[in-house]
Length: 451
Figure 1: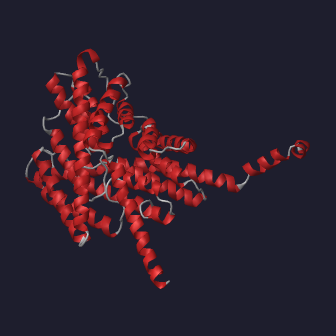
Figure 2 (figure 1 turned 90 degrees about the vertical axis):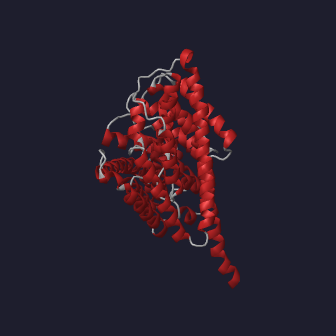
Figure 3 (figure 1 turned 60 degrees about the vertical axis):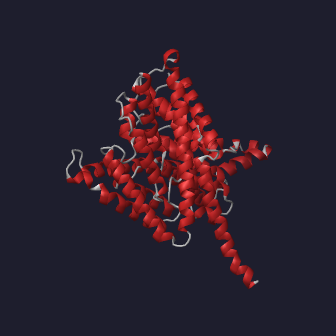
């Protein structure tokens, strides 16, 4: 063996390299980070479900005076979340996906640290749970993306890894995969929504992170489908009007949500300029009161993520005619309020409501219509059609409707592009990039005066 090493010095150097701490430490830290994303995502999911359960237990399901508690609890909860986010966790507001996208465009590690850090991991999880406990129409999936990206970026710092952009992408994909138990959707999301300019060299990072986070999730929760198993089959010979209706109408409503969210957010941001904290709290209180009123009018259906309602529709239980409109407004108010929380699960619930209503119009199966409505509306909101149909396929365990879901997603995307030209997450990410630029200029100004 020694003779072979003397004869082939490259082999000797290769063995020494693979045995060195410098080679293995980054890998071990990266693997540990990916497993950590899976574990924290599962714990986040469990705590979020418990928070929703406590809210419904507190407000009661059968009427009485407790049914009107959200008129007090929800606005106060929104104000508390907005204040904590502003005072202690700046950068935690909203979904979390725009922050991860912005961090990939920022080159300076300090700039990234303002929107991706361990402090924000704690704040994002805690405030999303508080929001759900107060009845906010938010989800945990978008926040899990920011959590995953933050954990992976921290792992890069500890392991001395230089591929920050690729690691943020890997952490984001792992977050989606662990949040929904949808590994393929995590990968597609990384390519289509997070990457846009995807680099092939990040393939290994993304795949490894998704696999390890998925294994951690499976080890804790077992293999499951997010909305159960759907056995509905869409027949093009009879259901093609439903496919077209869910794609076009769902995409139109999705684009409307995106357009309103961007316009309202920009107006609020300009209004905040002179008294940021006071006005932020006022907006949160008004939005919280609006969410409470809508929730009471809907009989409590619009509070929380909307998971129960969407799953019921997928399994064949029709939703009330106007549920989608009520959930649409509750989700919009929750988003523009400035509290931490995502729009993934609420968007799927709105889409299920649109599909359920259209299913009644066309005389089609509620389950099939809900699937198509989710694909059309979600593709319209985020303008990411591949992510839309892949995530719905994986969440329902039904692979018989691939073409129908693809078509609904593409129709939703095409309709949305005609109404709103800016993808929601990417438009919001520019806010964080602009803040980083302003912060840099403010820091540079005193130095220039001294010079």
